[in-house]
Amino acid sequence: MLRCEAQWSAQTTEEFDARTARYAAAGIQCRWFLGPRNHERRVPGAYKISGSLDSLTMVLPGPLFEPGRYTPFAEAADVLMTGGIRAYAEVRVESWKVGYKKTICWGSDCGRWFSRWYIRSADVVSRCGVAAVIDGRLDIVYPWHPFAPARIEQHLQGHIRRLTTPADWPTPCRYDLRLSDPVGRKYVMAICPHCGRPQGDSYEFGGPRRWELYPLTVALDAEARRDFQIHVDELRLQHRCTDVGDGQCQPPSSAETKWTFPMP
Image 1 (cartoon, rainbow, N blue to C red):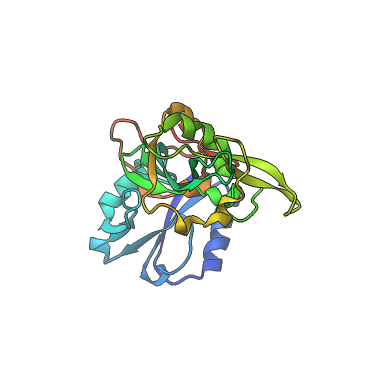
Image 2 (image 1 turned 90 degrees about the vertical axis):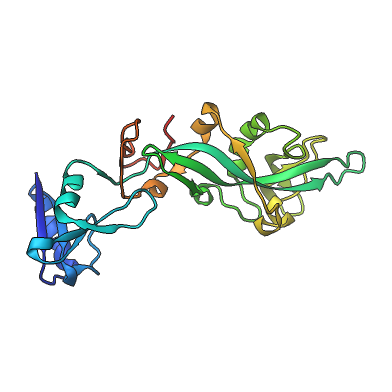
């Protein structure tokens, strides 16, 4: 059961929480509409209303990544009640932006050029037709810091080699977890793609600030999209969702899902 309740008089956040909890205990979902005195309250899923009784307006979420805007209440309510507002963005990854730096293998019997590289971000298009750039929260699971034990680049390096050519950049290095005697532990090292010698930590080599100014754009195919993970929280974006021919954005299949995959 859904209950829609407008709260015009001032009410504390704690009171909103308590009343919402009571409704939930009774099996009722409450959708709050907040008058001006409550606009600063943090009430999940609430909508701000303003104006007089005969000319009410409501702040309706805008299209993906656009700010909300005041909309005549009748129009906004129609959009809201017909499913035009979605809590998640569903995206298709079109390409990766890859930061890289050209370097030479230190081996005296090799000395060949190659590229150290890292995944900077992903170019995506939502199901409702909005293009955007997201970082995929890669640093949560694959942190970019000295002597990291795992990096997203390890997982995606096969795709990087498969989807790029020598005309794009010098051959990309491999990333492998190797034991370092001086450091006394294993960490992910750049490996020369020509002779296989460890080249040390790419972070220590200079970090993102000293890499190529313009990243390499790597267009993806279906196989690469399946392997690229985006954190659910990155896609928790309430927005006005329009069907542009592919339906509307859908939420993750489970509230417990830590990672979600881009739509095919």
